[in-house]
Length: 226
Length: 219
Picture 1 (cartoon, rainbow over the protein chains, first blue to last red):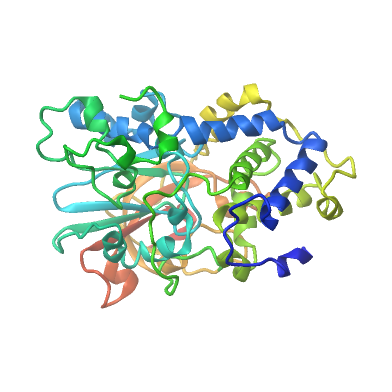
Picture 2: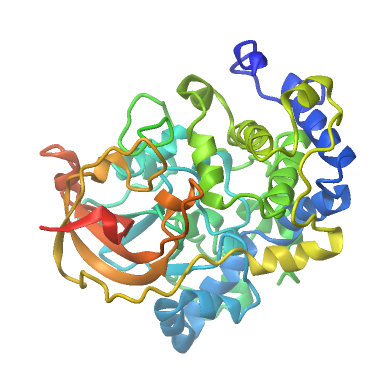
């Protein structure tokens, strides 16, 4: 591909005049003309991951585990089935594992080899999750990575990093924040951030129940809300 | 292969720089890249392992300069050409020219919810009993295959402990190269930070990988 050598690196592909945008458009045109894709199916895929599947799914799983010990036990034993019972199944969530933070252990999820991520519960991964800085550092110096996210763990807390090298997809179940005894399951779900389920954050504390602080606006359309 | 994708423990890429306000897609073409990649994947002409191997086979200079959706598209172009669906002259022209290979299926919009909700499970029965058991100390093989593998370099030759036996899964090292699924038992193997990273490693760190049986030998 001769144009590989002419590709201008370091730009951000942020508008339709971008040469890479033109390249994707050309590919889509060829595939459509040859009957290899149905553009309406492409639209439906985009709509699914832009509006229907996102970290609100995972937040519901975590909140249920916080209030229902039987569900938490099931989630620990057979995460795929427990998560499917809430309606979340499918692509990049076929084989789920839920890993639980404890007073002495903090869990962190990474895919050093590509970008494996539990799509059924968290949606499409953020850019930083797929990029070399996170993928390279998470397994050798996770505490510095966590510090970048504003999370400074005491040295006594062990860090357990799960490198998603196979088809198991991991989600972190963070510990329930203190002073949340009076909250409902729906209110608890609103404390569960995407990053707390990757392990690069902790759940919000009560009193910061601003959904806009949790996820990008496009994620807030997912599901019935609370 | 020891490709650009095998990033664990590499240095010099700079800060992670998470952006709390980052949009899901930075441009319309990223949306289309996601949709086209998944839609063509659903034709059933290649599997996830072949697709991953195509991405990691991109030239390192290109791989490190590209965003992830760009990596997806560049690998997809090559997959479509390899399987005879499109040709380089069509890409240059921006239009279809040749009839090309006909796919097994082309999902319609109505098929999308079912296709995505089913996913592509890759657990498979394995007749033989697992060779290793939880708690057992093991060593990861130190091999450097030129084809696809999912044993990261930082774990090769290292001592670890079997934490869990996960069941049979499609073996990517052959599946990526049209040499069959050859399912094997999969294990979660956990390593101490200092075993992986030496004296300066974090003493309160453990790292696990999921490893197929042939990546593992008795310690």
